[in-house]
Image (cartoon, rainbow, N blue to C red; front, side, top):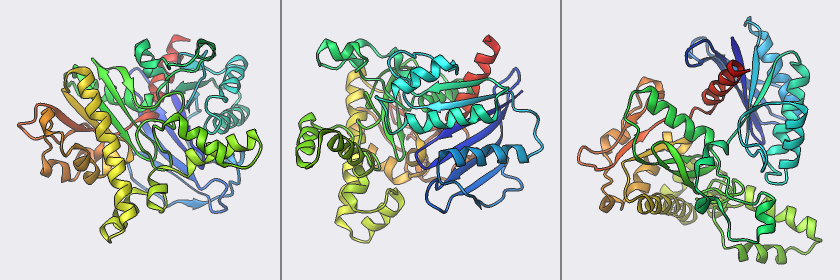
Length: 403
């Protein structure tokens, strides 16, 4: 059985093909189409083994419809067996969908309704789902949601102190990056490691969130109703005083709808580390600028670091200590300095990093948990890759079995 997994973003589509039998799904091919709408879109699609790897090729992809057409064409170019099912990552399912599910007309209707919660994330994903279903009409399609993993949070963590009328409409803290966090828990189990009683996972990349877990189950997380809040991110500000949002709305001299749209764009695409540094959204270039004496870049790094450290520290207090910290995501997995700076000053909590292990080259192609804590550390520290596509493939495999 072969599964196609589609993980779409605002300007790119990541896609993978998995072989799924009675064991855990195995990745066969991985690809990405990036630069959608830029006029310079490229696509690569290569064996997961890394053999016969081809460089990205230019493609025509002015919008998500053209992009998913190029993805389906790429998948069909390989002499692969028939695709048996397609799984999609969807950021926000809204208030009514509370589990990963096969996509039907009713589910698509609910996703359309959910767009009010994630107007920048869900509409492009829904469009891609509809066009992929049209191109692959004879196989089942499944939606996997970033919020499902956080449904174990208690009401005290998920409830906003706002009037009941809006809470009944679904205004609550949902949490995101759930497929990434769930993949960390699954990898710990597959590695036959003891599941930590008290664990914090920091998913750090362009989008960032930190989650507190007891026995592998989410009990609190930094993101809320949308993926805009929490720790400081690449182009998103993280947590803000609600009054600041009102202030921003009053500063924009246009009608109400235009003002809301303008602030929404500002908070999602023109804030965060990029706004603080005045540089493109890339931590490597920000660090290089800081090393060259750019004070704004250094301030951006310091604020990002403090924000993440503050979340880890508060969750440690919430759980009465930490047994394990895990770093994942693009920055979490690859930026040794960010890991070291975030953990600096947390020694009183029993957290101690081994500098050599932290700086060492990753082994096993970076696909297995890697310990970077010092031998005397009371809290174990790991780097574990985010494997959202693998998690989606597992869920699709499970739903096919149930169906």
